[in-house]
Amino acid sequence: MSEVDATGMLNCIPECAVGVYNTLRTLLWERATYWRGQTLHSFTNKVFSGPQKRTSGCGSPRFYYVIKIFLIQKRLIGFLKAQSLFYEKYVLMLMSFFMMVCSANAQIKDDIQKSKERAAKLQTLCDDYKASGNANVDGYGDAVKNAAILAIANSVQLENMYKRQIGETQDGVTDVTITKPTLDEWVTFAATVAGEAASIKTATDKVQAAANEAKKMAEEASKQKNPMKAAKAVKTAKAATVVVEFGNIATPILVEESAAQAKAVKEIIETLKSGKNL
Image (tube, rainbow, N blue to C red; front, side, top):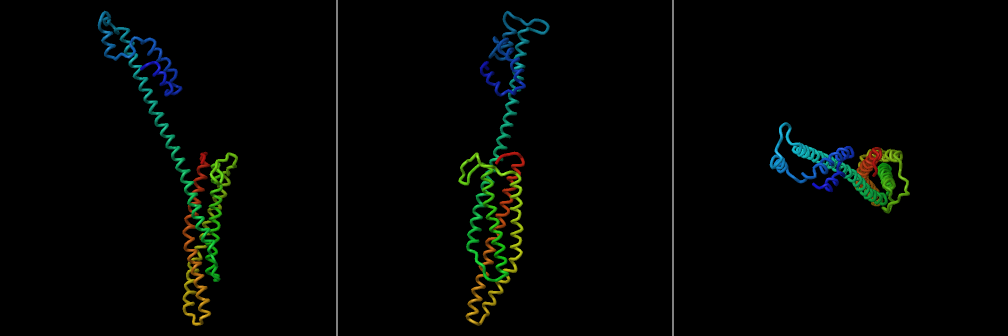
């Protein structure tokens, strides 16, 4: 190992070991210049052969320094390996943490995109919705429509707040001047999202009565003998059936959307409470 190579290792040694390293370098490269690059076998051959014979007692001072150098070098290499392993684990830990954060953010973005798609479907259903003229059936249809309108509004609000939170415009352009929503704003919005559940329950509580009413209307229309009254009854029965079908199609989308919004908002709040950025 050259002095240049060893000096390069200094970058891998923590600050607490710099003093030890500097002290050892004097012994390794200044006092042992002659022995640099030699093996332990060649050292012992040089020490115990030729004109210099081993003396009595503790042995040759040269042999003592040879062994001392090898022991210190071995310990230093072991220390460097241990530190290298520590930093490797530390870097892996940071990478894992970074990947988890990126994965969570990617998941939130995906959830918001799917929320937009569900909101678009609900909007189309609401645009096509028409009352049947029957109070019981329309009560169900109106309740579903009101819940859908709330879910659509919350979906738009969720996307707007998320864009502000990550510092982007609605077009996806980074804008550092955007004011991020506070944690309290997110908590308040979470309560609004939770209100969707009550709205959906209000609608689903009426579905059975509406379905029974539509079925009854269809049966009565089929029994009507008067042609004019029969035509009107059939038309009303069909309109009632359409309202019930509207509710049956919209409700599953509503339930999924409400759960997804609550999940996304919860994850955002937990991230902000932990002090992390989205």
